[in-house]
Figure 1 (spheres, rainbow, N blue to C red):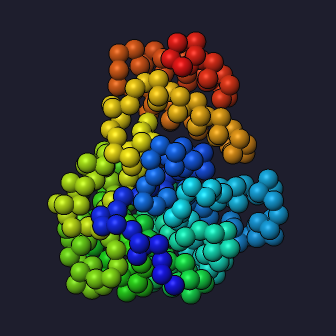
Figure 2: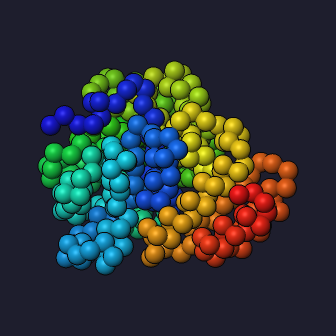
Figure 3: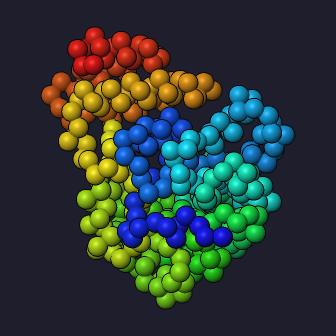
Length: 324
């Protein structure tokens, strides 16, 4: 089967999976404002999908995990990001992703959250390369969906000389490298100089595997520059999306008028309530902060908007400021 990866331009620019950010409401807005070359879901527990598999056969209303995997026709190609250290659970989640119409699956091997690591997942998998290989192979054997991986440079230090070969041996279709170690979290700048080493190891051991850089990418121009400097196949943009759902259309955050930003924020808030009745509206506060930033009086306006407890109140507060 020809995968969507084969049809992507070079270079390509894709959406980073981010917990409580790249949910269906946010992806819907980005699809409207300017589509990436591929969408990613938030990461979803393959263990949870497996243990609630009977619920998963019911309606979306009855399964929060299934709601998190919802997407629209405007979001293709779309990749379901999953995590687990159990090959059987990864296989089940991959088959489910195929049934649901996803275009690929991505295995999270980079999340630094302690609760995820205690399960032997996320960045914890860097410590167990044999388990990482087993779950990649289980996913590949479960369906014809292309299987990719998102990970980090290493755990306590850079470990590319051992970690990259271990991943490449299992032959995922693509590896996204967040250019920090687990220990560094997001406390230091992403080390894009090391993307050149990622590319060199790939070229030497498995030239067919695509490599994608991730970390501190501000906008599309910045992403193109990083491709030119490192030779990677594509760039994954995460925080550059905050406050700028137009990033993949080539806009910089400062290029969008405040009224247009706040109109998009109102739309996002209403879609969030509609699509995520199981989630706390406070999750939207990170978006409020990102959209209302970088201009005189922003702090005062942001403080008023932060008081909103639902979409209707947020819209009313914006209109009360004469900004919509």
